[in-house]
Length: 544
Ligand code: C2O
Ligand code: CU
Ligand code: CU
Image (cartoon, rainbow, N blue to C red; front, side, top):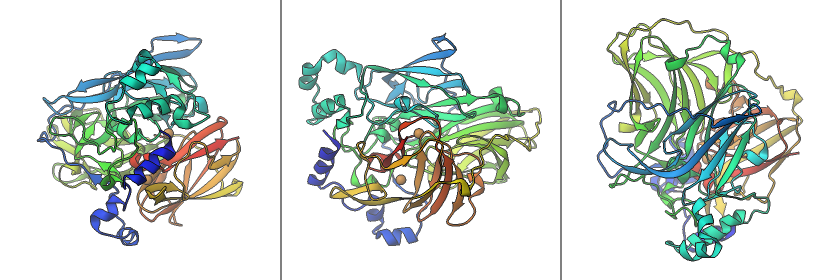
């Protein structure tokens, strides 16, 4: 079914209506905004007893090995498949995985050394892989209609597939539409597998890869299609930072489970092939009541009393966190930020607590020196309530070597000047009417792959003024940007460095500046609240 058909069906069914987050509170938009809600989204409640916190050890995702190297390019292979994983202790949860694990296997790469990752799709739905934060040629950036069709569809053959695939009435319609790239004339649809080429000519940082299929990114990530990807370089190597087991990746994501241990998600079409979107109450975003770190609920991690480097990613669909590290006596430990989405800062920034929106990454040092061996430090979420106020616990099990915190980090940060900008654009991220129902719009329009929303010229510096109604973490593909201002004033301390996602808060405006360079072609910018993204809040950026 085409996007238009999906939208008109939504209207016919009367789905849409008032925004869940406003309706639930009985507020008008204006009233809701004047209250500046701390959270955008509605929490699901799990249907089974949840495990006690800080009992499951923190898992570290396996690092993927290349299957080979050709002319200096490392080749990797990942099979996307359904697997039952033990996420809650003693409970089996069917998930969609990269390579049978959640998070997917971690990919470790070096700046300027290209890699090719061949993804094979053994899932029941089409998929698209996007390397978030990657400087990737458009053909490999995971455009939402550049689908990889399931291996099973190829095996069934065209006609058998249509006849045999329909447990839900619209599945065969979704099937044939997918084979035509969702009606998008520029879509490049692959059968069964695709080799994604990543030049990785970019600053050292933490990227992540995740599904990006049009209309269904939220539920696909929720079911498990997310993994971490690191880029290293000589500049980072030259800085004296914790390494080895003193560098810890932390992918934070909330989920909810039904009584049978399956992941709960309020999709309109549970087969994720026909109608896009979520039940009306969850239009603001889907929140879970279980906080997973690297796929484990409220884990505990054994550390020494040294300095640790935490590579934090918020891979949640809609949940924001305000992270703080707290000792048993209630004393806070500083989170010393050394990097942003797109790599090291010029100098560290100390935080007592750190807001992190969906898709943002923060590179943070924490110094356990001075803490007694045997004591515990909790990483808490100051925006949470009850169980969602806890994230992770560090258990200090031995003495560690002291380390100094470097006072200078990287000197290769781009400094773009407002006066060098050739274009200033205003872009609004707001709820609105979408084909008769409610949706999430960029400048008053829902996503349409056949429309070019913004055209930029390769090499141009631009200032974008972004404005939001509720929380919208806005992400640009291809480029990193600097934050120039918030609400007409100074950026937040945590806005330092080079970003690819900026967290706009309710009613807030912000200015960002970037140079559009890298590659020509069709890219995206969008809200990274995955439900907003699936329900229209995405736009095309054409680099010419
Ligand atoms: Cu995390 Cu369009 O991406
Ligand atoms: Cu991205
Ligand atoms: Cu949004």
